Length: 128
Image (cartoon, rainbow, N blue to C red; front, side, top):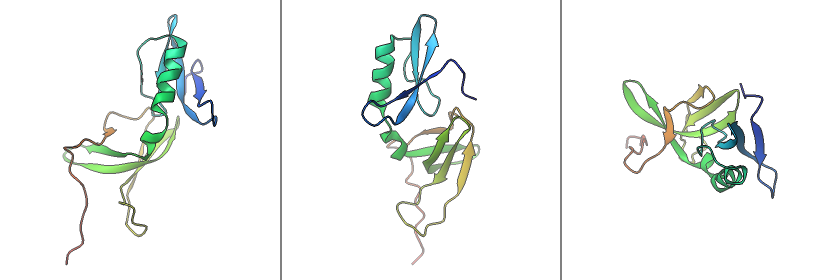
């Protein structure tokens, strides 16, 4: 549930939501759409700048979903709302690839993380 004192922030040019700014004493904290803090306590303008600099491009990135006792899954974010986060296994651009969806709580748990260069590719290649 989104706290009532959080203020939605939208990009000025297209009014697309990019996160929230929440109070922290006399200062403000920028919060991403995933519900993760992007800044510590800063002034209002710095919180706005952090949200606008982060933008929405990260939504198109590959993410990894850590699983207890298993290899991390390579996933893409499908939906983000204060009601939850939905990810699906990466289809590598193939329209006929089977995908598996996972519903996560919001804010997104730490098990959902950006992909690193040292992560396994995760592709399953067909047998020849």
